[in-house]
Length: 205
Image (tube, rainbow, N blue to C red; front, side, top):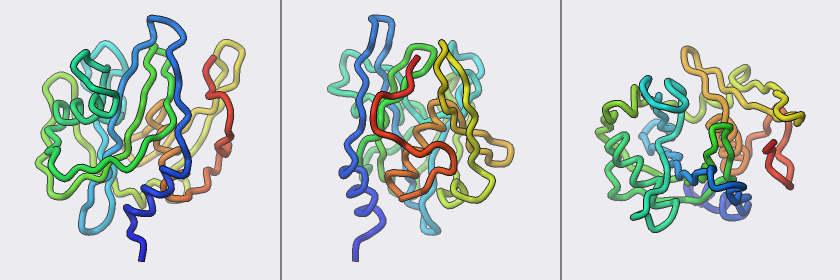
């Protein structure tokens, strides 16, 4: 019988990610890790609350990640390196299962997201300044009724759907919300109650 991880890997590989090329030198490539922690009671998603003193997206819920550095072989290595630095991820046994669509942020980042299976247990520790808090959220909670909502924002005359996941005191939204919705759609067959994913250009004004 096909395991859960094998199914996720197959689904991700069966849906090639849509990749973005920076439109100007000011756009910065970034790699983020989407960690699926293999807890005995089920998969948990690992997220961070960004530090309050950062220049961009202070206090927001995000995936571990950051800008590509010259020493990084590729953006997958960027994502893994940043997760090790930001949450003290132990890299032994971490398996990248696939890649999601790139997303653009209004602050000028092109985010490439890599879904990874992370063995349990882990002794996560938040990095000073960059990470305020580390969150582990049961994946099953994300598809509960009333958790997901969508708003349509207008930017530069273009309507853009913005995904929100309301999880009690925590709300995941923006680029991270979009990546999370895409993970659930592709990796787990979730039917987005908002606008369904459509092939074609990404919503960038």
